[in-house]
Length: 273
Image (cartoon, one colour):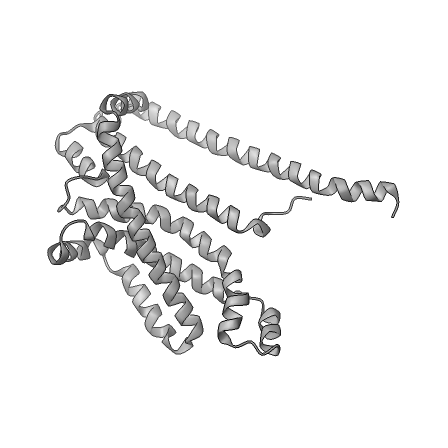
């Protein structure tokens, strides 16, 4: 191999890394531009007194959030985050476990699929009061958060497990590997991209479920409770501030899972040539 060819091979990874960094930089700038545009539209709508002045300006909302301080947002944020996290763990654990059973025991697929569709189509807001009456406390918050996570994660996990390369499965089978060996050595690895993509959707969904659970009553803290109190008091800027806190919590959940996915799946990053 000539020296020129050798240098070209050595420079190729550096060039790919530089190009990837450039793409990430452009993506970040695009996201920031989108936020700026949204804030600008928000400010214009507030200036036009849309909906009889019930749209406060972004600076008014930020000032209210600053005035209220951590003493209001911090405890409510923590309570909702903890409920969403519990629901996220329970719902996704159940979803992944059932997905594994569907692949290992195909005859139960129809039953499990019907249960998943039923959980997705049932108006969960109607189930919340029943759970509240039966269990009380914060159980409806965790329950609704788990139910909002369950369906997308199960669908993603099942599709990921079934996306395993047939040649790899045949190879394990040829060496005497059974169903569990094929699952452990091939299918679980193949399922990671789809499953983690589903978990990125499930994280904000868990926050939504937790807030809806808090709306049902039976608890004395949380973003949902603070939203209800602000609406009752006709404190519009605080209502918008709590909505921003909810959006920030949902975005934080998505970002954490996305970072975990990037760390766990380095081979799935797009190659830039």
